[in-house]
Picture 1 (cartoon, rainbow, N blue to C red):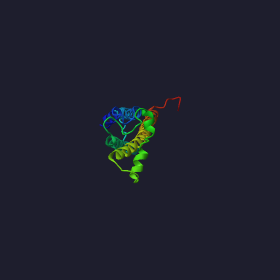
Picture 2: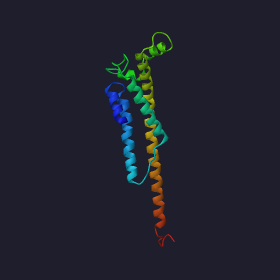
Picture 3: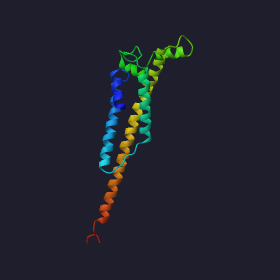
Length: 165
């Protein structure tokens, strides 16, 4: 469900496609890794990093959905989607209205939510990469330990020959 939410955010120009590709790529890679590990009898439990990533994904999607207006994000930088990911220039106006300078309107609230959502999107991308690294590292260490144990077992079972006595 979270994957479809991110795809719809790209369609509505609320999130850049490259960030969503990283997030979804991680989901497919970790799901595939856990499936391969399960067929080998290895259980890779959910990590704390994975739980943080999931929580930040839900918050990010909610913030970006609540910030949306008809026709896309509440920003004038829609023509430059790469730059829009880095900055939200209208947010300073919204924060200025929030501090009492001018009338605070619903549009200002949408701008603040959009800025927070875009900032949270960075947290999602970073935590996705960190979480994926943790899962692959865990799999590697478990597989290596299992392989070493099997090698030791084979050496212990091998009968001694007359030359080695």
